[in-house]
Every structure is written in C-alpha cells, then in structure tokens.
Image (cartoon, rainbow, N blue to C red; front, side, top):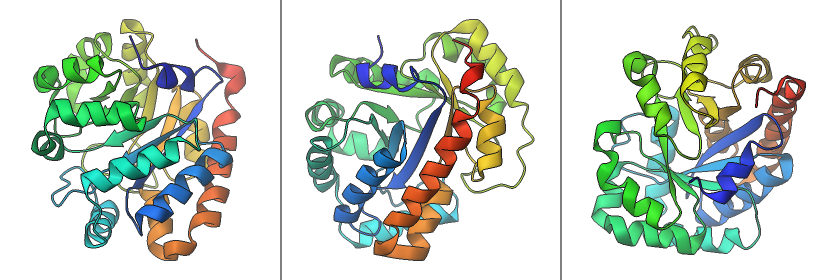
Amino acid sequence: MSNHRIAKTFDHGKAFIGFITVGDPTLEKTEEFITLMERAGADLIELGIPFSDPIAEGPVIQRANIRALSQGATTDKIFDMVARVRKKVQVPLVFLTYVNPIFTYGIDRFCARCQEAGIDGLIIPDLPFEENGEVRPIAEKYDVDVISLIAPTSEQRIGQIAREASGFIYTVSSLGVTGVRSEITTDLQSMIRVIRENTSTPAAVGFGISEPEQAESISAYADGVIVGSAIVKMIEANGEAAGPVIEEYVRKMKAACMKNNNDLKR
C-alpha cells in the first residue's frame, strides 16, 4: 500500500520530480524553494538530508552538503522546516538520505517524525534492497514509502525489486555518481519494460538529466523524470537569489514532460 500523496503523483500524466539539498543556502531558503517548485509544476520534491559522506553524489551535490552542514542544518531543524512548509504545500515530499543519519537518529523515531512532519517517502541510496527489512516495516507503520532504486547493474534483480516496490521506482539512468550528463547511453527502455512486466508501480528516471530535450525523450517511455544536480547548480551559482531561476527551470522541465501526456501507458 503506497502513501496516498505519492500514489496521486502520477495520476495526472508524466511527473517532474525535483531535488534540492536541505539547508543550502539556508533552511529558510529551502522552504521558499519548495513552495516555488510546487508553484512551477513539480509533482514531487526530493529533499536531500546533508551528510558528510554522500557516496552516490557527484561534486555539485557534495558541495551543497558541505554548505548546508556549515550553515548548521541538523536533522531536528530539517524536520521542523518540513513541518512548517507542509502547511503551505500539497506536493509529496521525499527525503533522500543515507542510512547513517536514520540509524543515528533511531529508525522508529526518524519514521515517526517523518509522519508528523509530512514526509511521504524515503530514498536511501546506500541501503541495499536485500537489507531494507530493517527500515521498510517501520516506515510502513508510519505510512512512509521506502522508494526502491533500480540501477543498470541490477538486471537480474529488476523484476524482484519491482515486484516489492512501493511509491515509485527510482530508475538510475547511468552508473556512477549523480551529475549532469550530455548523453545517456544506458538501455533505459529495456529496464522500464522489465519493470512494467513485474509491477504497476510507476517508474521515474534520474541521474544525469538536465535538459528539456532529455526530459521529453525519457518521459516518452518513463512515468517521470528526476532532476537534482542541475537545480543544485543553480543554487550554487545564485545563492539566496536562486528562487526565480529555479521556478523558471522547473516550469520548462515540467512542460517538456507534459508533451508526452497523450502517451500515457497506465
């Protein structure tokens, strides 16, 4: 059973999912950016909890983590900010966090606070599918989806992971760390086909997407497009003044995804 807000994300066509690091440049600005992204058409927003050793991230998001931590972003302050912004936005909010901050905080306490604050799901890049049994049942108790990642390396496991997925599936477009790529060569269409053969859970594609043309071509066969580094780069370049730049970019990317709405597959 998927979280109700996430389940609705893909009801109205191809989804645009944006990522920002919480606390970069400040927690107040993160709150503002979330409201702007929703207004511009983001269907779901991923919020990165800053962590000192983010192994799946490229240099852009690593630097964002450092900026956020240096501004004093703590897990408690992040929960407080989410609780405030949740009163203003309806968009599903999903934490992207590594295992360490969850375990340090306490799994049950962390998931309970997710529910209280209005967090709908968790993406945990360093939690292998085979080991998510410690987190998933507790998260489910608090109506929080643990989002499965399916990478190009896991071909044999795609079906198995897809069958047990909840919320949506984060389909990793390329090997290695996050970042902006001009070309995506992974055979995504085959991955999406295998996913669809095994589940009705929507599949969104992320890692390396930055241009409207990429969003349009990928949303032709995927249920959604995820963009992180490109937005974080805008925050790095514009700091506290990044709001209007982010809003315009999200609007453009959502419009590119919408071009495929007459091609809905579910």
